[in-house]
Image (cartoon, rainbow, N blue to C red; front, side, top):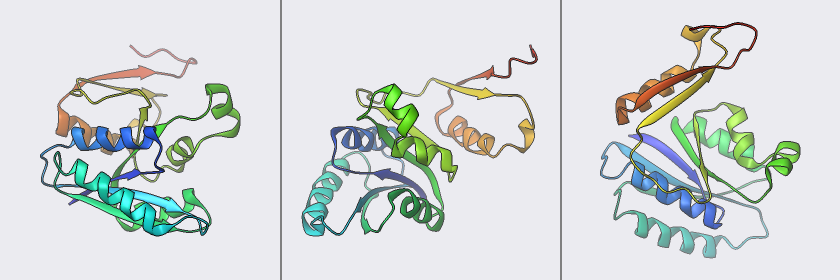
Length: 178
């Protein structure tokens, strides 16, 4: 089974990311979508489990392999990173919301922090996005050590799964590659 993790914080954006992931991998029997909720001691675990179970049932119309996990701890980023390592996660699908672009740049967001951890690819879903067929994939690259880049392994998997058009953009302004 290939594990896709969708962190759920019960915001509309996290629900949208869960629906996006379920539609993206609809009817793919080798995909296991894990709805991951992180809570601290002040939250009620029973209520969170009930909400997750309702979301699980809703998404199972698209993908039968939906798992839920409620985990507590002191640090969301470290807990999610450890969980993704243990479960050999293929991809994290997360929503991005709550702060302006300027605020995200200076204070960060959990989504951006997970992307920086480089545990596995993080598919960032904007709040108003809905899934349609993946037709184009773009890679931004400095064109240095391309063969040794682990990102290409993940990109190859997406290319194999969805067969989109690939676009490569050189982001190193010190040299030009045609």
